[in-house]
Length: 101
Image (cartoon, rainbow, N blue to C red; front, side, top):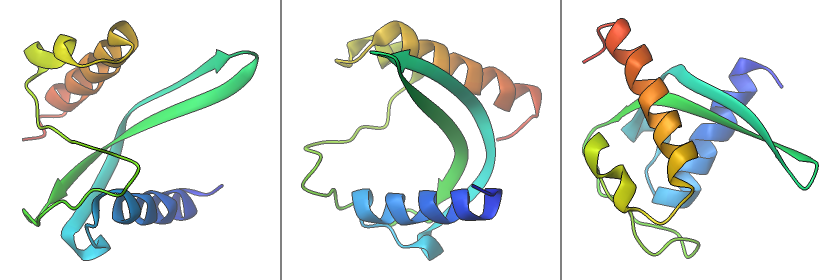
């Protein structure tokens, strides 16, 4: 899969999950990537820097909420906290090293 098709797939997925149009979201560079295995099946996560025009999020039926959170509050979510926190911290470190606002 090329970077162009990956970005197209990501843009399409954002639209399906949030109702945001591709003109309402600007995708930046990847800031974190990881591969892990569950039951011998490989999974990958890639986190992109993204901004939005402030458009309204309309969640798909697959989700029941979304939240904007501070890094210090991540432990309050019900997820694999250690993995998620490591992902957020790695993305934050990369972003601050690049001086991205």
